Image (tube, rainbow, N blue to C red; front, side, top):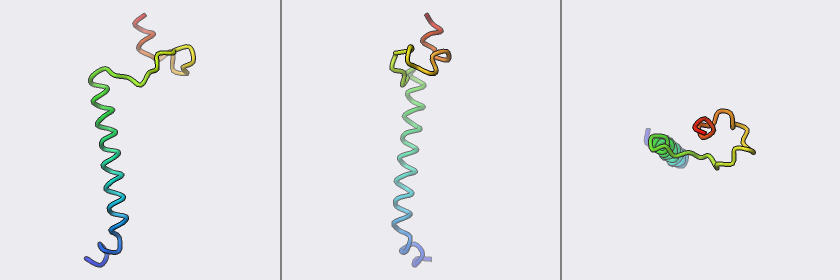
Length: 59
């Protein structure tokens, strides 16, 4: 078992780093959503999702 671990330590470390990065990104997105933040730039004329935007519904 330890020889397998030693042979694959690089893959294990890289996998752990990627899992942590994805977890932090998801956590940030959830926190931003809870606080009402958005990635919207505010320029609805050039946006493909303009009809689904909450900003245009409020106006």
